[in-house]
Length: 248
Image 1 (tube, rainbow, N blue to C red):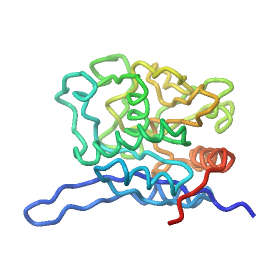
Image 2 (spheres, one colour):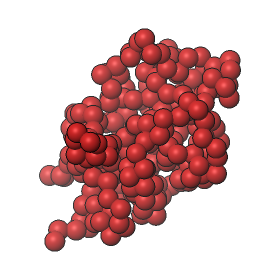
Image 3 (tube, helix red, strand yellow):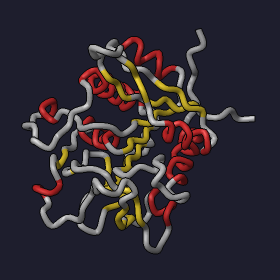
């Protein structure tokens, strides 16, 4: 019987404070969604050496890049926007090393929220740093008064997103002020909000199963249909070319 695919998850990080030590943490929704999709989640703590990252990836079959605070756009040649709230540099250092190695190995990967943005910039795309300024006619993509805020979604024919959602009215959760601007080479848009904001991408490269959603199918505000995106990812990992795992 085929074993369940092992999915590595990056994690958030908070540096030590005067009254508490440093710690790594992750929202339970991410690994719960993987378990429901018949995968085995494994959290990958943020480290700063390539050898350990390589060992991590020897032991998993695919990677889910979780959401979080904003990426530091200065690393990609842009100026900070006042609305940005940056993730801890230790996490971002690790995440950028991780996605670089995942891409080199062509390992299956699913980026969610900031994870999708990281996937895009790591492959040569860029980001809109603040939707209200860059796209002033856009719909609200965050609502501070409603954590379950949802907006409509338009999917592209022939994509994984269409396979998940099919036809009809679709609504997804939304809580972001940054978004993909230019899509990385080797990727295509698979869903947009009606206002034009990119909400999902996927690889067009035959040797790499890589997808991303700006919205969060692991969230408590997600629908049962949203969970199917995670199921599609886990199934895609299971059907990818088997690799030798490091045992020692």
